[in-house]
Image (cartoon, rainbow, N blue to C red; front, side):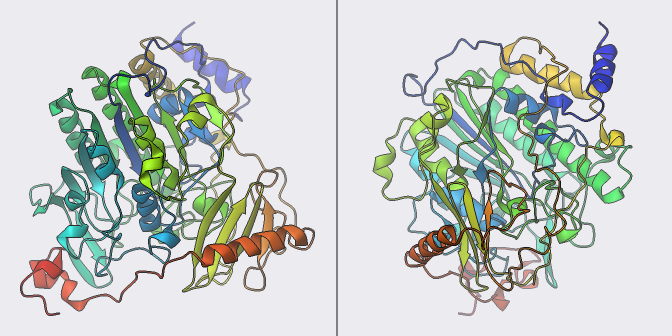
Length: 560
């Protein structure tokens, strides 16, 4: 059957309502070792972090509006993490990933680290790359850091990475690589500690991908590789031009009429191409068969114009910066030939801080040697598809603005409004499931097949009746959904398993559950360290440092 006819058959058979991108069969055997514990070599570990990627911004969650074939192929043949959580903003999530600790135990529970803030992830913490170096790993970071840089000791190459190519602040322009914060503007692009001044006009997503490929191609394969690729995409750039993508990507989405969403789609598509290029080069270098690939967002998407962005968390509630599911339920998967069971949509409860003990174990270490952590070793749980040891997740406790959320098994308590006063607590599209949005076209399937061949050297078998098992469905929204929970008045309670869209506040119906969750929150408060936040330092501003953001407290001219 001609390729176009396969697409047409799927397009009409599914009545333009299902996720065609997830129609891969998982009937392929990979003849490699099934466990890193029996592998003679430490596995290569690649972590790809998308910035501000919403739940609904990748097609394996059921919306074909923005096709992501490379991500889909890896996810479909790995393990999709459908009960996986991150922090609601950048810095706390990245600190949790690197340390294995909740933000209340790193002091990063209140807001992000701004460029002018003289604090960072505590130096007494041992980070993931430092642990991996004990096994002989070469460790390289690319892209965003956002864990402090006021002194050089807080920057990546002093925290366990052999090299860093990217930026230190929370965002930058995709082309000129400057960062604007408030009234301050300066270059923010580094290779290790040195400023990069020759990248003007080069698109960040492609630039970071090129550097990742260069590292892979030059890597000494007698040593294991840890590659941390933390993309700028799909975060907003500077306020004067927040959404940016090359025209070749934007032109892929003529069906998206909203201009901002169309540009955003181009940004996401460039991110997907990056994933494909990295995986293809790992295969070409003979490294893929002994690799673990983790893909995760750092927080939910800034939808409906939040942060001048056009992400979508539909059908989940809320946006980035909130503790609703749309702000903290993360798009993520793990792929590796070393997993025993693949092609699974995992419902095991998992948090971003679990990656440190999980990957440490996968690398050959004993997590008991790590000391007390908030993270759990999830390798066997994911690989064997067994129940998660994690029964609760502390989403956050921010004592400064008095907000927090905690989940224990099926139930989640959320309290406080912070600075929003019940704003940004709605459900924001686009859903991407309208007929005009279904554009999983010939290019999508061509890329999907290409990635399948990279992963398995076999062709994909399509099943036109396959719905995406990773899609969240919530049923009809009740008329009082927006009013039955008013966080400025009282905490709310939701059964997240039965009600992932947080339609039904159960606080009055389940007082015993509320009491239990409130008591557990109080116990967590007793373990919290104070927030590390400090006022912005006027000596940090770029005009004092050649119009660049720098580790200003190492400058001899700095006035203490």
